[in-house]
Length: 105
Image (cartoon, rainbow, N blue to C red; front, side):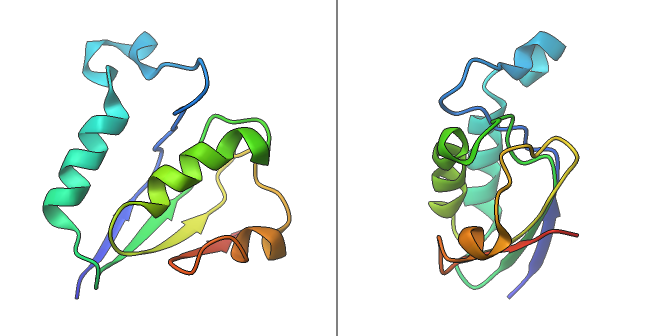
């Protein structure tokens, strides 16, 4: 069992907010994250995701980003970042997935 940490995923799975505007290294950045995640993280591991998870503005828009994270191995602890405008009620978020815990701070 291992503990991993990552932040600033800035996912935009179903929205038009590509990260490659910040340079070629950012092209398909979510696929690069997924490839490395699958290579390193096991189902027994815990991953701390320390904010700026999704560019979405609402929870309905952000659900595809949360599903993307949910489908990766490991238990996830998510902390709200300053760009996480989609973040809604903590009770509602914590009821969504058994492998994901949402923490406001």
